[in-house]
Image 1 (cartoon, protein in one colour):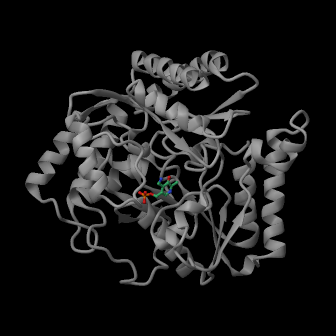
Image 2 (cartoon, protein in one colour):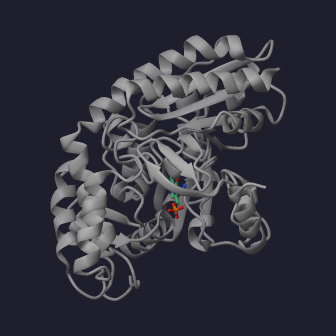
Length: 435
Ligand code: PMP
């Protein structure tokens, strides 16, 4: 048994089964797009640890900032002091946000916490309690956040009653809507968006009064739900419904933010400005940090001392975030993301069809380097087989959704050669799963 396998056994024995794990690799080092196991084996990491290390593993600018902050003061946070890295971060983040109206911040550690913070704020601000979320959405794992999920019932199985006041509307998932299923030849993405908006209105008429609804919480591109991109005009339609009924629009950019889609935030692909944005994952290149942002008059609806935590806005994480934003500018990450995106889409669309089982098709979708690959007309378990074959080819890819979908989430500074290798390995893995 290798050292890695041996240590994995120890991990399996001692770490909760509840923590689903994508691999049993025991890693000890990462650099850029690669991670190494304790046995010295090198893996191409197309996961960025669930869309987090957008600057690659151990970017030197981030490492340096973290080392310096660790030597100054690591544990300074939002509820104890102001501290320089947090104030600098606000200064650095503001010009990157979609509007100057986002001028008030609340810092946390994880996406789940920030999601919950946004719900608390919306309920305080509106004095209403209902929250509308979407089929296929994932917003986190703590009780409040888990109550907002509907990407996979496994995530709340056995946890008893969840938070009340949550209502689910359909998301415009093209291949999964009745119109497409009954007639794929005449159904269009626009129709799909219109149908979903119509059903959102129906929800307000039949089930949940808009006068009792605090917020609509939405991912501008669904993450765990399968990298589903809503059709043109859909987000604008949701915004119009929010305006009509005086409901807050909360945009969960935890997975889609920080350059992942080729713009700093996915909502910038639309003309919509939400009322609250939730940011996490890519913000700090792997250090735990999240925040919500809104207009100050909205954020200040939160009464004093209703939002507290021991670590929110940790100084090391804020220093890592400042360094991350510097890397975006110094290395033109958005530009590279868009270039490599074209390369991935064209590579997958050219190569994958020939590698598929007979009669199967593939939907390559997403934006930037948030790329979903859904296999259609394949046997159940096909995407998992591809993922395992990829691992045998020393390549880490993630699955998404309850359907046969993979997600490709490389760092935004991936090189042309690395992208070529990634396309080749994924294609080989599909061909191997087909055999
Ligand atoms: N929102 C979205 C859109 C996410 O993708 C995730 C994590 N996958 C979360 C919230 C929860 O974030 P965390 O795991 O950091 O709590």
